Image (cartoon, rainbow, N blue to C red; front, side, top):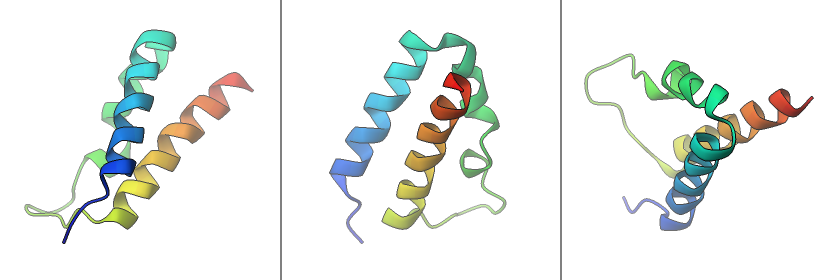
Length: 65
């Protein structure tokens, strides 16, 4: 399976934005359930990456509200 480099780039950019523009939120990234696999060898798919990207966007949206 080939992971989408576009999604990965978006995740990287958003993570950097969180780190620089919202340092108070950056610590929450480690608490996101998607980053804590419940089994030893999780399958990382484009769907999983998209869901993670959306969770990062949601973190910023909820913080702005």
